[in-house]
Image 1: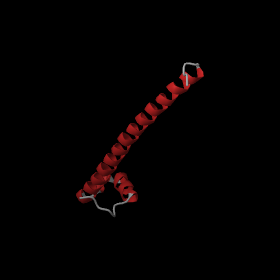
Image 2: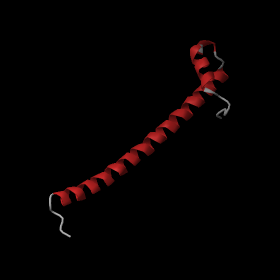
Image 3: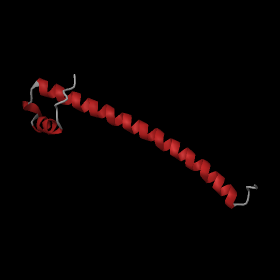
Image 4: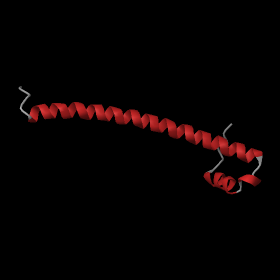
Length: 75
């Protein structure tokens, strides 16, 4: 279970003296890092999908624009 009170300062303190940290502290640090890793991974996946969608829309608009500029579009 992730301790909502766990802070980045606590994590840094545990990392600085990992050999002297209690098992509870190590467990909380691992939970914190696991949660942060999963959230970051999820954001990267979401942003990758967003970028793919933007690229597709851009390419669609670019193709239409190029058709018009090259005189291939007749209205």
